[in-house]
Length: 502
Image 1 (cartoon, rainbow, N blue to C red):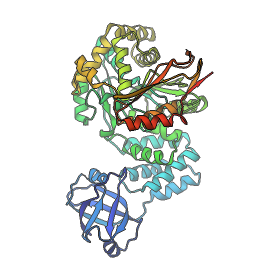
Image 2 (tube, rainbow, N blue to C red):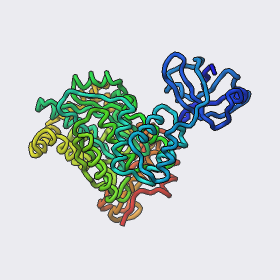
Image 3 (cartoon, rainbow, N blue to C red):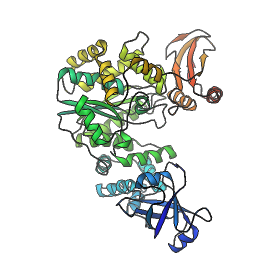
Image 4 (cartoon, one colour):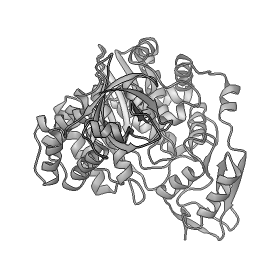
C-alpha cells in the first residue's frame, strides 16, 4: 500500500509507527504486528511494530518517529510502500537459543543481519540478549557472533603494517586514558617514523558520567565519514573519532540499547561488541584494559573470564591483543564528568604540579604496552615517558584537535572547559581514613548533576582511598549547570553517598 510519511515529532530511542485503524483493516493487520516500510526510490527499508489510531492522522498516512526518518533517509511527505511483514526465520533461532541450544554461524548471522535491517522487534532483540546473557555462548558462538557483526557493517582497511588501538571495558569512574594514550603513542609514531597508525574510535557514555567522545567533542569535532577519517589519518596518523557515525558493527548499537533497557549485559556480547569494532576498523594490534573491583563493572573472576574470551576470539581473527587486568576499585583521576575529565587529561599533558598521577601512570602503562608491539618493551617505556615529559605528546594532542576542526589556543581551551556555575563542596563529617569510594554511586551522582549532556557538570574528588582526613576536610565538589540539579543531587547524597570512612 502506498502511503505518505508523517512525523510524530518524537525521538523515541527506537523506531515507532502508527497506522490509521481503517488502513490497518485493509492490510488485515492488528496492533503490535509488524509492517515493512520501504522507500519507493531506494532499496532502504525497515520493519516496525505498529500501533493503531483514529483521528490523529489520515487514512493515506503512516506516522513515524524520527528514528524511521533517519534510517530510511527520507523527509516528511515522502511516499513509501507499507506492507505486512511476517516473522523472520531468525526469530526461531532466538527461540532455539532460549532453549539453551548452540547456534551455528548461519543462524547467528541471520539474527544479526535482521537486527541491522530492522526486521526484528525490540522485544525479540531483548529475548536474544537475555538468552545470550543467561545461557552463555561457547567459544565458537562468540566467534560467529563477532564475525556476523563485522560482516553486517562497514569494514575499513589500511595498508600500514601496524594499525594500533586501545580499549577499556569501562565501569570505573573517570578512567579517561584514551586521549592520553593516543597522544603519547601518536607522537611516538612520528618520532620513530614507523609504518603505523592509530585510528582510534570511541563511544559515548551509556551508564557512565562520560565517554571518551563526550569529552573530546568539547574541544574538537568527532563525527566524520570514512573518507574524512582516511584524510585525517593520512595527514597525522592518529585521531579521536566517534564510532557511531562510521557504520561499523551497527547491530551492536541496537543490542546495547535493548540491554540497557533490561539491565543485562553478557560477557559474550561485550567481547563480540569490542572485537567486532576493532576488526571492522582494520586494527591489527590492540591493548584491552579490563578493570576489576568491588564497585567496578566486573570482579576479578569475571575479568579473567572476559580476558579468556577475548584472547581466544581475537586469535581466530589474527588480531594481536594484550589484555591487562587493572585495579578498578575506585575512580581514576580527580574529575568525573566531561569538562572535569578533560581538565585532568590536559593537566597530565601540560605536566602541571597538581595533575592526577594515578591517571598518568595508567596511561603510561597502556601506552608502553601498545608501543611494545612495535619496538622492544624497554625502549617503549623510556620513549613514552620522554615524549610525555618533553611536551611532544601534548603537541600531538593539539595537532589532532586542529586537524579535526578544533582550536589549540590555550585560552580558548580553558574557556571551553569552564565548570558549572552552581557548585558545593562536601566535607568530611568526622576524622578518619577513606576506606572505599563506590564507582557506581559516583557515576550515578554525576548523571544526576547532568552528565554527560551538561558538559560542565560533574564531581571533583579532593581525596582518594587511603587518604587520612580530619573532620571538615574537603571530600568532593559537586558542579551543575542549574541550581535545581544541584539541590536534587544533594538530597540524593543521603541515599547514594559514595565515600566510606573508617
